[in-house]
Image (tube, rainbow, N blue to C red; front, side, top):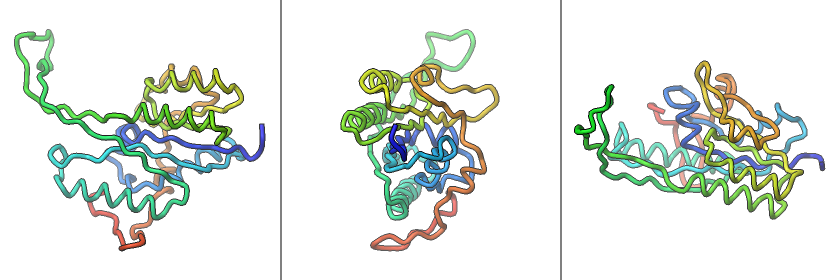
Length: 224
């Protein structure tokens, strides 16, 4: 193994948000700073050369603050790019479709269905799998670190190990709550697994309240 250990991190934005950030005061998160901190703690020889953030533009119709939520998200993404030298944002998309689901009751009443809007993020898992496999095959890194607890990524990790056994695979499962565990499918193919992200790590990995971009100054939204 060469030193330093060239490391690329792949962040499932949806998984990170709902696993570690929703309902906290730490959503104005400097992803590159957080990744470097966690990877250095795991192995001081790790050198993060790239952080790939997989997300999708939210829809105003299903956002609590409507269009203001969309504006805040875009300002956050612009702030990330302006403040992080090695960050790449890879966008998927949200599909919103009307669906029918059974009412939440026991026993299930199969004659009763409710009309609901179903929001589903598309392309993230496939994009993470493709990017990580290509980076390994192209010899871009010595270590891949997956920030997700989605077991759908396990086939990609299995293929990485089968094609290049020397690659180090790390998994950071952004989960909280007593008794919750990292995906056993991901852990099976990883060399190390981290359960959760500590509050102090989130607190100390925030973007400045004021970020200068090439065109304008962005202020952290009050509701963020």
